[in-house]
Length: 311
Image (tube, rainbow, N blue to C red; front, top):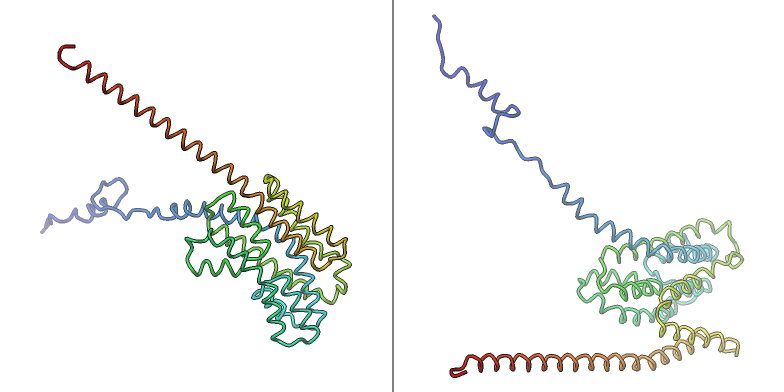
């Protein structure tokens, strides 16, 4: 006996429902489009990383030779490699590291080393106070990380960049800081490893790398600033002149103080001129506004007179 079941075509129906072009009988899971958004979001971040690294390259070229010399001197003094690398990673003070290295070589007391390092690094208080307004909207841990990696060269670059752009991506800032810090640590490690091959770092002229880098940063910062150029000329000329007169240890300090005073003395004239110009512009704007209001009042009065009865 042959039986006919009405539900026999059901499997074919279900198979057709899942086939391509079978309509919306069974909606398929949409393909996630998430990866496109992160790709677009990372473009500004990549641009910020590239900008920060590009700004760091000139500083890195100056850091590596000086850190190399520091590593060689530390190896010559008999310090272990890990102590030298740790000092560059955690102290990260440049001149204070060289001062501490000399004190360690002569067997100075620990409190003398700490006090000397503290005094040498006191200038960072001024650097931090000058750049702190730029970081007003940052979180505390971000400010602490920025302050940890703030050096003289980093301050010069950040000041120049913030003078051009009041708002900078944090990725750009931290990429710069991390890159120059890593170059300092890497240069120290290279100097320690090459300590047996290099016995006299002065013969290589590595100590000139840092002043050369400073002069390059200074030239880039004052090339379009007449007042900055004048201050730099006074400071440089004063330092050279005082050195020739025999004030070898006080030449830079006295010249810097005189140049800073000179820059402060010429600043009010420019600001006063700007204030006077702004005040004149405000007065002219107020006069134009008063004339416009008077013209509107006269037009209103004329229209009301024309619409009066008997005219």
